[in-house]
Image (cartoon, rainbow over all chains, first blue to last red; front, side, top):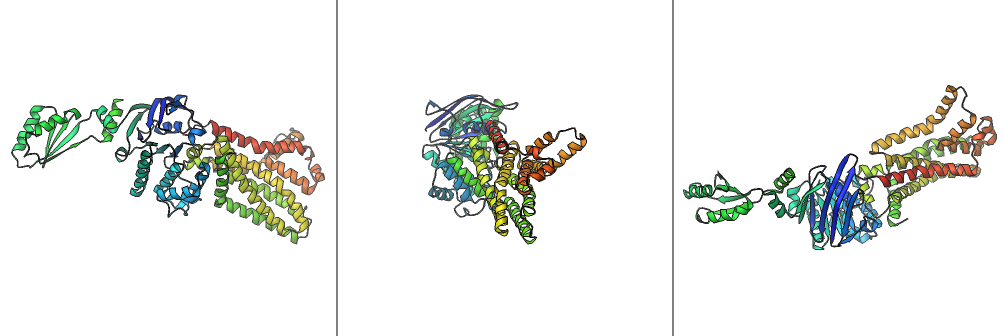
Length: 303
Length: 264
């Protein structure tokens, strides 16, 4: 399976329109992030894909062919629920053993997955003694057990320490490298941004925008910050400031050892041209993109 | 049953054998049943007169409790742990999930009852053991009926603590207060309710049906006639129908409710 397309999904939960004409495209070898405030419909969207919530309307296609969310489809999906907690009385190995039997996987695969998620040493301990992060890693192990074509991860970073995050990023890289798909929902945009290829922003059950982080930044039209390293006692810094002011397209800020110009993304080249007239004054420069949180706030605010 | 269902049966059985509450109540049942059996043997009274009826009373009290403790968290426990969605995302129908959970827990219940009564039978003499063996089948039916009821409560509940509370109240109502309630009804209505109606109400409760059937086995039909309860004794087919209804209706209801649920 190389692509999944979901179109026109409507879900009503009681009085709430949880999904309202939602759509998403997933491509092989790519990780897609579902972002949005609480109640935006992220988890509902995932549960529609998992067959846990039947939509009132909606169409589904895999590799361009219409599909039903049935047992054949479920065979190809791995799922990590948010804040998962398994039975306290069983060991990690027993928990994974059950899902392995249910998925038709052998003991070797259980052992390999336990090692992959870093629970090899804790596999004979009951889940009661697991930390939240360890439970989350066990859940990740359950999700990847049968090498699914589509991995659906609901808030996978919650409760994970650095070791757990490394395990998660390795799994994501492995899935992308194998040409499989990952759908991941998170509130931790900064942490996840660099690990995904595509971002789908939801608000009130509707998809506001879907694209790469750069495309979202472009759509948000937020100012970038160009930071110049300068010497405070250099009289030419004043001239550089004047040139920028005369140019008039950016907001200029002076700080010790630094001159900051905030400009629209399509004006950065012009800033570079102006600074090229002061080669000895500017000792170094870098461009700061707006954080994804700001982009996200702008997009949601504009929606 | 498919691969997921079979795996779930084994998983449920394994999980129940590690549940402290189930182990404690099962051990209590085995201990008390053995005590009753040993006392009956030392008193040198006919088994059917002392040990049998005492074990019926004990069984009618404890086996429904074991069964409901076993089943109360079947579905709501998964909901509390946030694993219900994970379980239902496997390639399996929801009806099969309920059936597999019921079956796995029924096996655990069977083991608990067989061990409890088995030890009591071992503690008794040969004649006593034969008499006590007649308890085994009806006791399992009683347990399975309450197991089924526990499954339904578990499916309807949103939180495990709620299910546990409802289970305790249901156990008290059906095992302790039901018969008292019927007596109260007779007193309040000053006998206006017919004996037949009371009899039907007695056997409508699985605990009542169990007690009545066992009373017939150990005390004979004459005692029931003296109590005016002969009219309530269902025949073989009616009895099978009643037990089937108690075993199946709550479980099927549980399956239907889960199948309709949007797992949010």
